[in-house]
Amino acid sequence: MRKPFVGMAAIALAGCAGYAWLVAPPTAAACGGVFLRSMWQDVRRPSLAYEQTLLIHDADRGREHFIRQVAFRASTESFGFVVPTPTRPEVSKVDGDPIERMRAMFPFRALDDDRKGEGLRTGSGGGVAPRGGGVEVLEQKKVGSFTAFVLSASDPSALAGWLTKHGLTSSRQTDAWLAHFVQLHFFYVAMRYDPPVADPKQAAETRAEIVRFSFDTPLPYYPYFEPAPFDASHTSESRMAEIWFVSQRPAVPVALSKQGDAARWVRPFVEGRSYTYGVRADLERALRNDRGLLPGGELGIQGFVDQKSSRQGFGDVLFLPKTPVTWDAATRQRIAPLLPVLDPSLADGAMGVQP
Image 1 (cartoon, rainbow, N blue to C red):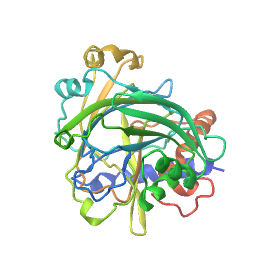
Image 2 (image 1 turned 90 degrees about the vertical axis):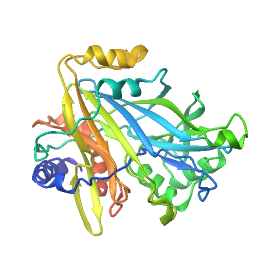
Image 3 (image 1 turned 120 degrees about the vertical axis):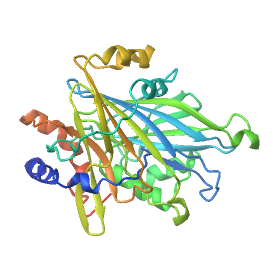
């Protein structure tokens, strides 16, 4: 029974508004997935150290388009990464470079005044639980330089085994990470890169492709939770994330932060100025052939940056309404499946499971 948590979250999130901004670290990262590879100790391992994401959410239809620039150091070996989504995703390559145009048209600008004490209200994304046992491959397609596998899974061991069988070797740390999302009944996109040539010189090059993950969710979801590092030497890599959030309704990103035995909701990103009024024309120019992804109505753009040196202790991010809202019974039912994102103890049989 999840309804009681809705009321609890309303009180707790509103209560954290006065201090959440104090714990938003001044340095941060972002990946939204995890690289899987047999040679973790290789210093030339692929990297998403610089992440740029355009998140478009249609608040009226409950549809999210998660557009990410996948910048990586090329490799002579096959490698891949996994992105969890709350409902079955559609995966597609994005032509052109809308991310670069977003940076030019809507650069991050720091807030002049301190508005970090604004109230938070309850809310969570929704999902449809995968059915069946083991691992089911729902779709396989070529997306740029990657082969994308859309998966559902009800058995963490089976999912880890499937990844290993298909050249995406997992580890004890990533197996625990995958088990967390199996418990939440999430879907997965496994992206496998197969190098076209085995030229060590080309392996040193940095490449970038833009991929879109689209899925249904009443509130925006941002994959942020990461597995524990393989070893201490992999925790200090310089990382940065830039995020553009586009929707008809302004929102506040919230994540569960667990430090030791203490857990609380925090704002994991630093928020910049918003762009409003008449931004649709510029957004359409930025997206070009993908401008049909934009929702109807008046749109706003919120900019965020993240520069943490480590994400350990942080769960995934939900974007909650910035202004007070009252959920009706139907809405509460739709958002209930993602309540465990902010309180993992609500996952089916997951008491004690923490991000």
